[in-house]
Image: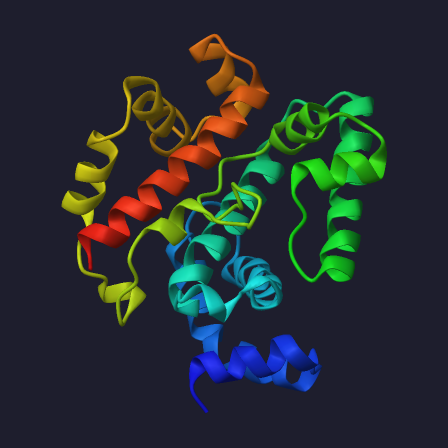
Length: 239
């Protein structure tokens, strides 16, 4: 059974034994990525646990119909979870109670909607469910967190990593720097600035909005449009 067929079967059946089989097949990725963060004050076993849980979550989120290899999809997902673990562990400034409560409610609602909708919900869908504004949802998600390149950025759940062409092995990936640079070079000045702030400096949407002198909602919408442009241009360049 091919990788695509394996994930298709799991997506259609939700069979936990099948998910465990997939997890066993790809646990080596969790092990490799966990080892990369050893020596920063956290034991390997703890990092491996974080990476393994991220792997399981990634299996549930992965959609083979998008044509992306699972190894390419899961690597930034696991890396992002490990970085979040370090960030949460070392954060000294606590979030205001109201923000903290909204973050918890947003996470719970997102999990519930993911299960009922069969896909990760958009900020708008979460906001409607909670009876708050879309911008409040975005702000709560950004508060105290780090940018993750695998986080869905549009209505269909597309992420920055999904605009990068896939190759046979994520650890031996052909350098696509030139193609990406050319695609980014075709963006407008504001769009290039957004890419730099969000994906190079890894700033939150709120901080990006502050630096650009616009609203966070504007940044969120521009980000979706930019990722769509990059995806289309990279597809053409690699055709």
